[in-house]
Every structure is written in C-alpha cells, then in structure tokens.
Length: 194
Ligand SMILES: [Zn+2]
Image 1 (cartoon, helix red, strand yellow):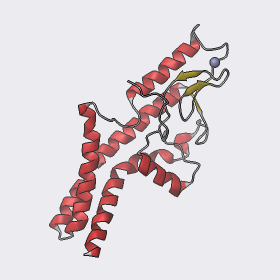
Image 2 (cartoon, rainbow, N blue to C red):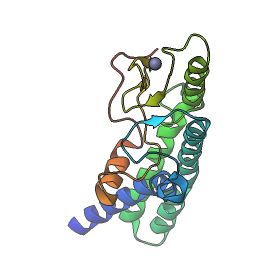
Image 3 (cartoon, rainbow, N blue to C red):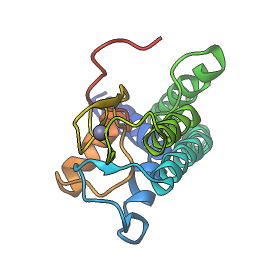
Image 4 (cartoon, rainbow, N blue to C red):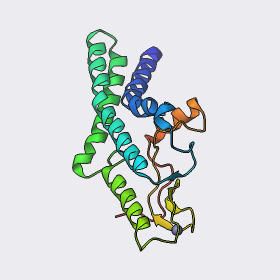
C-alpha cells in the first residue's frame, strides 16, 4: 500500500516536472545569457530584452506541448501494469494541460507574454521621445517594476518574471524555486492591474 502511494507521488512529481524542463533548463546556458547582467540585478531595457521575453514565452509554450509526454508515458505505464505510477503521471500531465488551456477562457497565461514585450517597447519609445522622464533616461527592469536608473521614476508597474538567467541561489535551490513559481514573479505589483 505504501509503495503504491510512493509510486503515485513519484509519478505525479515527474509528470509535473516534465513540461517545465524546457524553461527551467534550456534557457540557463551561459552563451544564451551573454549581454545580460547576472541574476537578480535589474536588466536595462533593449530590443534584446524584448526578444528574451518572447523567447521565454516560446519555452513555456514548448512546455505545454511536452505535456504530451507524461500523458503518453502515464498511459503506457497503466497498460504495462505499473498503474499507480502511470496514474500519477497522467494526473500531473492533465493538471498542467488544463492549467495552460485556461488561456482560452481568459484566465492565467504563461508568465511571459506578447503584451509584456509591447509594454517594454512602449517604455523604450517614451524614453527616446520628448516625454522622457529626465534628460538621460535609463529604464531598467527591476524585480517589482520598470524604473529609470537616472531619476528613479517608476515607468511601468510590471513585476519581472523569470527571464532564464542562471540564478544566484544556485542550481538546486534556483531550480526548486522555478519549479514552484513556474517562472511567475515572486512579488506582485502593489495594485492589481485590470
Ligand atoms: Zn529618468
């Protein structure tokens, strides 16, 4: 009985982790992160950063597709006689898939969105225009918002999600944190956004 429960939990954990492997592992290589300051320092706004947001969105969407793996392996395990392990995989895969499908109901999306990239671009456009916050605007993305490095003005109330940089809290803890947060910002903006 205990071994059955352990198999179920192991299956569930594995099935939950599989769809998250692309964004937890693929983006952490040092070559992919050249030109960005090390985590968790603020990142200066640039077309490169905007592109990174779109790359991360792609990694998350790739994860949604890899949800098929735990579903298929779960099904095969059930057929093969290792049914509790298979149910665990199946449950976790199904859970993740339902979660991601909420996008179509207007619910939670992936942590990095096209809207986010557009808002970064808007801040850069304003910084280059006559409406800039100060003579030498240097917009940077901090953990809780986009602020100007020169005059400290808050330019956009947008918390920073995980952007794929290797984490300062080390491989294992950073990895655990990513798994738990799913790449969403650990802080929320002061006021809810509509
Ligand atoms: Zn400024």
